[in-house]
Length: 272
Image (cartoon, rainbow, N blue to C red):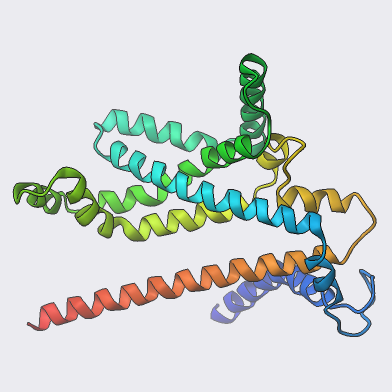
C-alpha cells in the first residue's frame, strides 16, 4: 500500500507541475515556437524588461497588491478581534456573512462591485473607474481571508494575559499592541501573505473594476493571448511562479524556525 500511495502522490505532483516545468523550459527557447526547442536564450526575458506596457502593469499589480494586503490585514485583524468578543449567535452570523464572498463565484463579487462603483460615479461624478476602484475591490475580497487566518489565533489566546496587563495599569491600546499582537502575529503574517498572493493573482475582479486607464498584470496577460503568441508570456509567468515560490519557502522556513524556538523554550522550562 505504501508503494501505491507513493506512486499516486508522484502522479499527482507530475500532473500539477509538469505544465509549469514545460513553460519554464520554453521561456528559454531560442526561437518563437510553442512546440520546437532550439537553443538556450534569455532574449524573451530581455524583451519582457523592455516592454513598457508589461512593466507598467507589473508596477500597478505590485502597488495594488501591497496596499490591498496591508489595508485588508489591518481591517481584517480588527474585525477578527471584534467578532471574537461577540456572543455566540452574533459571532455565527458575522462569520456566515464573512464567508459568503469566499464561497460565492468570483464573478458575482466582481460584477456587484462594478455596479456599485458605476452607481456612485453616475450619482456623484467625483471619480471614475481606475486605480481607486480597483484598490477598493481588492481590499474587499481580501478581508474575509484575513479574518479566517487571524480568528483562530485570537481564539487560542489566553485572555487573562491581556486582563493582567490592564490591571497593572497598561492602557487598553498599548496592552493590545504589546500583549495581543505578538501572540497573534503568525496569523497576521499569514493573512498578509495570503491577501498579497490573492490580489496579485486576481483577474476577474480586476477585469471588471479597473476601467480603461489602469491594467493589472493578469489583465495585460489576458489581452496578450488575443494577439499572436509571444514567448514573453512564458518568461513573465516563470518570474511570477519563482517569486511566489520563494515567498512560500521563506514563510515555511520562518514558521518552522518559530516552532523550533518555541519547542526549545518549552523544553528548557520543563527542564527547570
